[in-house]
Length: 288
Length: 231
Image (cartoon, rainbow over all chains, first blue to last red; front, side, top):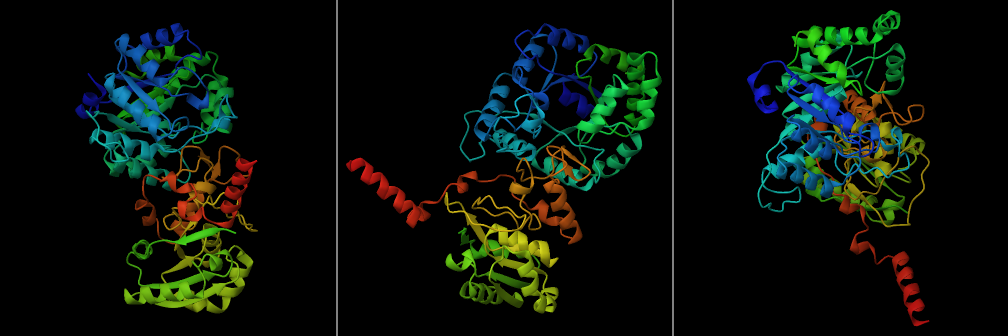
């Protein structure tokens, strides 16, 4: 079933994420993707994730499609201006891709090319609006298109942000601009997610909770220090720190988080960050 | 000097929405030279607003609107007139609008666009910065510029890179600009302003407009070019 149909259908939808290779050897990328086949509805392909230069999201999407997976093209506004972004949206559509997750993108200094000139001509909201305009048969300057695309447009939000107000306001602008589904940043505190959902459900858009698989206490502490919008509570850090089998514990925590938040939202988006081979085990443990 | 030009009156009037009472602040610095914020323009604005049924509770024309201490001192005697207004219209560059917004505790509306003319930059003492974008958005953002206050220069709101009100790029020195904007508008009870904000920005307006290329500086450049050709 396509992501569009699955979301419409109202059942709990599961998606996962893979990162394209840094280089031209896509063996591992394809192996990881193969493990997700039949277990998730769609697979997001990141766009120069964390501002680290690598193979493009579109290339990753093409490779996934050849393997029979449904990809979600992630697009950020850091590296391309409105001409390139609109062109790539048209290209994606012409190649048969429908799902696009529209993001602003991490700042260049966080990645491996800190001396790059960041673009941000558009941002997540205006990229969504641009995609919507293209669907309407015109580019954002109002010029007619010969044939128009059709997308399923996604957006991101940070449900653990404090304060939450600025994030909710931006999400509202994303929905207004054309977002049709949401995949959230990772959240480890179901009570915070509940508070977020209480407000976000007013926007009437399917929301998939973001799950980042923990691999160690050090990784959790690293994210707390360096990744904005992510907070792993001390209790979880202790839990994985004390566990003998950290891989097993990480899987158990991810499955537990999914189950704790399953009733509050329409799906889960699993980001295993290089440990995609553990995703089937998470889904088994979560009974999905 | 910082070059500003008046926004169309209809745009400024549109900013007011349901507001019926305003205070006007003009500037005797660069805005006097540009004839965008001196007393005659302030009085014209006052008269145009009154024709539209808007009450002007008072006005001040201050030497330099880029100096917050000076603005505070000069506006102090007018506190009650400012209190009586729903908002403040500021007739000067983006820096002056931001400096005024930082001291008045009222929503501010920019009456001007600040224009990029290449090398002719101004000097100011405050933390306010203007990118001379030619399409001032300070009306929507509580008088804090998202182009300069946000590291990414985003115009549609906060990204996911904010933590505890700080920007993840350099948290020790940079607050999240959108956190500041949200905080101020929330304090003023005017978060509705962000909902009307245009989605796209016209970066073409960041180029010096043709009409301003006939300034002395541009002439000198062109004359020099001619001399070189003759040689």
